[in-house]
Length: 193
Image (cartoon, rainbow, N blue to C red; front, top):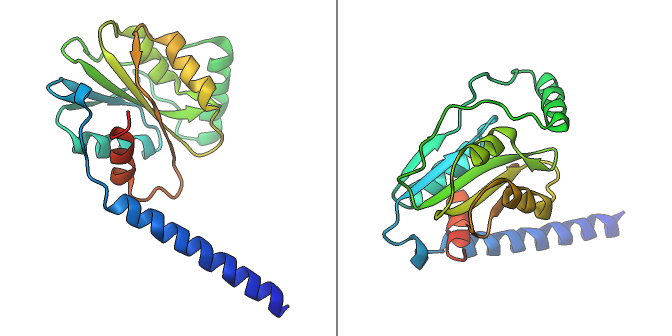
């Protein structure tokens, strides 16, 4: 019994040290804007049902200048998570895309698009947004939040097959639960895209 408790304590302590090292590594990170973002009109667009993607979008928007807009449905999903999940699965199976309010992207050069992952895919409102807009001659930078599984390659291919742009930058996938130092994680990602 003593051996088991000692082992658990050692493992816990080792994980704590690793977490503190990562925390300090992220805490001291500085934003060095990539060259392709310099002197560009930037728009951050997101859809968020539970608030996680909204939080990431707002943190991202606070790092650089630009505008931010939320994708809004013309008819909202049910508040009950079980009814909503059932409806979303049905819509995905049928290839249905919900109607959204228009967002004009014509005056922007770089567009960050945020979506939660639903059933291993991007959310349907974001898919509608990507289909409804012309991204030709624009840089698209997607970011995703997820709490369950996320087949990243599937989601990236889904974006590529949905949008009409030649330039899609390296996307961010951020786990929703236990997000800490969001801004610092975003800066690290931005410095490398």
